[in-house]
Amino acid sequence: MKQILRWLRGYTERSLTLWAQGYLGFLGMAREGTWGTAVAATEYAELMSENMVATIDRFDTRNIYGGFYEPTDSAGARRSAGGTVMAANPLPLGHLLRAAFGSSSASTVLSGFLYTMNHTSVKSEFADGVPRPPYTLEVHRDVTSSHRYAGAVANRLTMAVAPNGALMATVDWVAKTRSLIARSTPTFPASPVEPFTFDTVSLQLAGAANARLESVTLTVDNQLDPILALNNSNEIARIRTSGPQLIRISGTMDYIDVAEEQDFVNQTERAFKFTMTRGQSFALLVDVPVFVYRTFPTGMQGRGRQTVGFEGMARYLTSSLSSILVQLTTTKSNY
Image 1 (cartoon, one colour):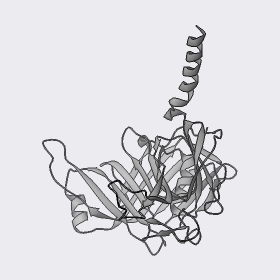
Image 2 (cartoon, rainbow, N blue to C red):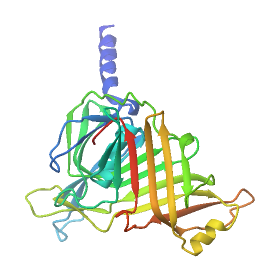
Image 3 (cartoon, rainbow, N blue to C red):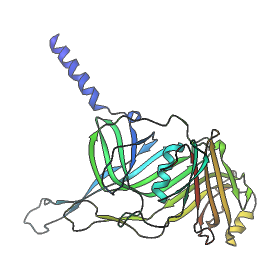
Image 4 (cartoon, helix red, strand yellow):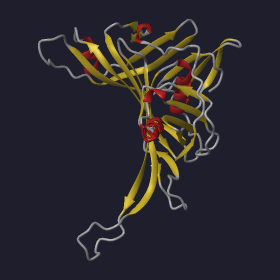
């Protein structure tokens, strides 16, 4: 009997460590003052999924070694990168927008309570070798310790919405370092508790309301390129951009006439705008003053209803010094 009890006690102790549960995880975020200098999480978000991973480059040091076995290689640079996916609660969404666009300007809607943050096309880099504002990410996976990714910079931000769903915000991060830390205690947003959802979307094309779009995706691609150097370290030394910031809009449209197809053929430029709200206080506006179709693939897949999956680009408007404006109204006056 004592032996059975000892076995059961050992089984119970092992059960606490063998089966980590994703629903017990969370994401913590904090803005950094200096790239790669980790700071404790100040904001928390509930996730749908994440795939932040650490990888190690490898390199060979011998090819001719007098044997039939595979020779020993050497470990090289260490890289940390991956994505986080969340239903876009207005409060943490502000950090994602700042991470993707850089600096923002604030305007007061209701003094002491409500503020609008205005994000436009990137105008400058955060610092030499750091194109966008860096963050420290704490990813807890219910494995006792949390994984901390310092110097995380947003390579790509995607915001997508479709019927019967929330606005989904996906960020692809490039980070400088990875380490293990003691788990912090998360405090998730209490107001609002829910994210932006499909049933508050209002869309405009060329200044007129449009109810034919069935899904919309906004992609902000910063085209980041992590750089290695001979600097007495196996971590990335800096991050550069391999091209300009790209703003893309794609989606699915009900195909009932050739009007939009002709706009594609003629490369007609017009404005694209959509808004979302949460309660009476929180709002999101995406305003692209000059939008043009890049693809508009027609075709019939069978006997069913016809739709078109399009893609377009935002063009730079000199008068506004930007190709996009994203406004987020929340109870935070600064991100």
